[in-house]
Structures are given as C-alpha cells and as structure tokens.
Amino acid sequence: MTSETTQVAQLAVEALEDLKAVDIRVMDVRDLTTVTDYMVVASGRSERQVRSLADHVISQAKEAGFVPLGTEGHDTGEWVLVDLGDAVVHVMNPETRELYQLEKLWEKPARLRATEADLTSDEADSDAGDRAATAEQQAVL
Image (cartoon, rainbow, N blue to C red):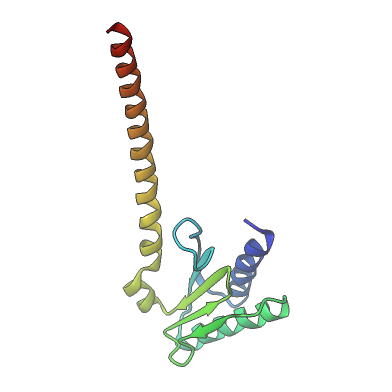
C-alpha cells in the first residue's frame, strides 16, 4: 500500500467529516478488484447535503493535488460517486444506502475469500499427508 493510496482515502474521510457525513465506512478492496484500492461510503441527511459532501471531497482532493477521474449522480443527489482513482467515494442518502447495501456487497466476498483460503490450506495439508503416506507405502514395498 502506498502512502498516496492511503492519503487519498484519508483525505476523503476528512472531507466527509468536515461537513458532518453520517456513518462513514472505509473498505479495503485491493484483494477484490483492480478498479480501486479503497471504497469510502457515507451518508448525507438530504439530497442537498449529499451533493455538498461530494463537492467538498472534490474540492479538497483538487486542493491536495489529486485530480478526480469522474463523478456520477450529482444531478439527483441520491447517490453521488466520486472516483479519485485509488479511492472511490460513494455518498448516498440513507434510503439509497439501505437499498443497495454496498458494505455487504464488498464485505461478503472478503469473508468468502478467507473461508476459501482456509479450505485451500486444509486441502494442502491433506495433500501433504497423502504424499507422506504414499512415500511410506513405497518404502515398505
């Protein structure tokens, strides 16, 4: 993880905190996608606040020398996405956030991968045991 990657995610969080965003969550998605390293999800209490929060993230990013790659949804104010490259910021009204549940979408694959890793290591242990048993059987013959 580069310090610039961490810096852009932290900048987004601080900008959201400045304007009193609600329930800010940062998810490390580096092992799940190549699109971005971090997803930052936050809620605003109204469409106006959602737009203001996104605008503040954009202005703070530009001020720090990060050029936003794009934005989506600013016109409606229900869900504004700000693409900062290493971090993608999702600012939503509470109803939209509850409907799409991005945290569950991105956290569930991480839990599944951990379980798969456990299975893979168990299978590797089992394979190693099988190889050892086969070697013993061949030595006896």
